[in-house]
Image (cartoon, rainbow, N blue to C red; front, side):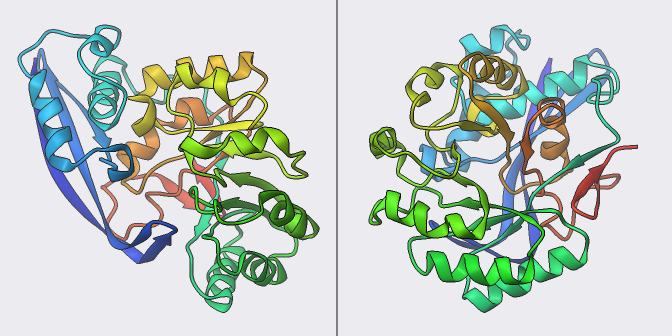
Length: 312
């Protein structure tokens, strides 16, 4: 079994801004595994928020080169994270014919279209463009500034669209209960990770009028018990779980605990988005627009139309 890994840079269609910063490109690591004349490909995104760098992830991948492992035993060699994700997804691609089409996938999967942080007017303009393209689910990135004003501007141009919010841990300086009550009138369907992962216990003490989703607070199935009572939903990302194999484990644990399932992504190509489809197929909410946001996706990438991933 031969492993190779390379850094690939994609250009974003427009700057992408969240509470932790802005970017104009998406850098990923593409991983290939060759075995018995067949090649499987995966893609992962090192995340500084989780202590990862491109050098550290490449080193983790190289550490298992010339080692015999499968999707089950890989967990004993590498921790959850980007490196294991790239390898795990490459194994799925290698070992499962016509992956992911051999799973029971619907003809279309609704996906969120993401509005990044900007002035209220700029965010409204971006949302309006998505609405005009037929999007029915919009995810709005926010920090702690102008929360109501930005959301109100987007709601004004998207009166019939489902809106969800992603604060990326940025609301620690706000009165959470007051903020959630203020935006309730805007008919927000969900708020994702309002508080830092290491300081979200306060969510147990509020009766949120809007469902809350754990992202940075939820990586693997081991995290689920601590989420009950704080969140109603978990965002499963393969770069956090360490691949599709562990994503299925997290999905089962979350459902058993009574939590709903969202499937999300980092910025990247259709290689990464496609790998998450088996979990996304049964999720209540999907945010796999990463490939839509880049201008130079892979050949034969996913087809996005009217806010949906069209699979057939």
